[in-house]
Length: 248
Image 1 (spheres, rainbow, N blue to C red):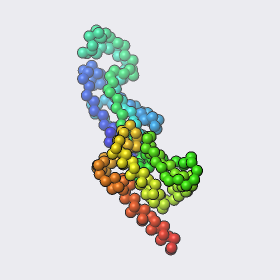
Image 2 (image 1 turned 30 degrees about the vertical axis):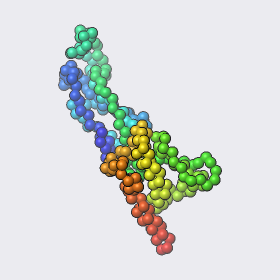
Image 3 (image 1 turned 180 degrees about the vertical axis):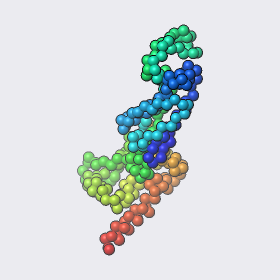
Image 4 (image 1 turned 180 degrees about the horizontal axis):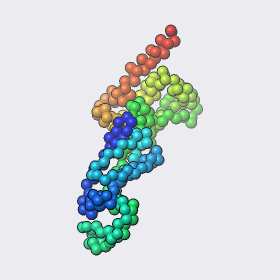
């Protein structure tokens, strides 16, 4: 699997040891099928092909997180007295009536993970969820790292201000620096200590760091700023624009 901003590419290479299946494919009596399924987006599609290699291009918006891929060969027509060469001794003399669409061979299934949004800020944001605290009063921001997403918990007043301000484009970057930056730093420290691959945010963070060739043992503050594309610099630029607009 490879991907760019718009498309996920699946490259399939067939290596079948069955001369029976290979001959059926050659004669176009059977076809290979690539089956792609993503439970998060409800995307499910089968792609037929007959060569030993095949590339499938899928719009990135159709896939998110875990994607299951299976490849198999299925009959393209009815086949009478079907026999498999080099079959197990118990089936060597057996003959079968094959109906069009019957599965003749199955490869081991594969699972990969993909993030649908390839913008770096949105990618980091996609693994974080901001929630309102159930407690009353002025409370410090908290973060929880034990789920698929990192949960950021704000006091009721802070959460109300956050919802109001995040809609303003000029304030989006300063908000990211104020809220996301410190939580991302904590996440990077947690990544060093645990690195539980079963959690989605860990996989996404590792993948983004690999893309940018960032080493987990590096300085967390520098890594966090690189992941967020120098948020301090962009925050100062955004605030300067707001100040200049207010004084003009």
